[in-house]
View 1: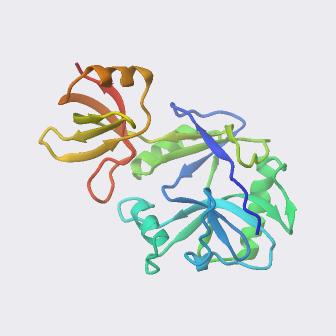
View 2 (view 1 turned 135 degrees about the vertical axis):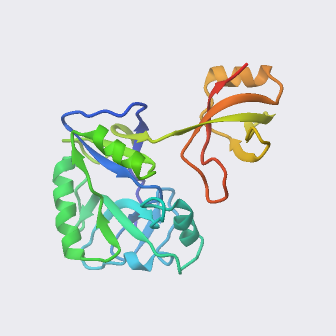
Length: 255
């Protein structure tokens, strides 16, 4: 088994609807590559024994997709996916396949996206697994799909340019993620430098988590000058099961 690094995405701030693009739901789970009798994460962690449901031998195939756990308030549950990753074999899983990298021991990376999608559909019908599903997608109308994601409290959407290859190990503008951010007014309660970490709390004084990524140059400069506590606005990818903001980033410091 030779591990490969998957293709990565750029950020796109505003949702769009463009000809020549397809749009997929962005499920909140674990990026996973799976072959006939093995699987591994984008960072190269072997997960074969953790997800035996994904064994589908006989096709000499490598798929790219998202390992998810089904949620109650939304179609996905990141905490559940991580629970299974950590060894909870009682946690049910599903795999949403969105690309195919090789088939019958032949690389298909340089097939145009639409040809890979057609091949992926055919291969999944041959695998016929209860646990491996085709990632749905729509042509052109990203804005309508994004509204559906917001209604279902999902992470966002992914935009992919048609007629483009799979570029392993590359962060490409041909694939873009548009996040369904939620915005919150908070209090910055503590700032630690080296590495820069900002602790957040609610107006009532409840700890809401820490910011460790996404600092702009302007925000960094203000954090050096100001002494907590002070108000700020953050964006996050929703909430964790423990009631903390998930992956928060500071968008404004109020002074």
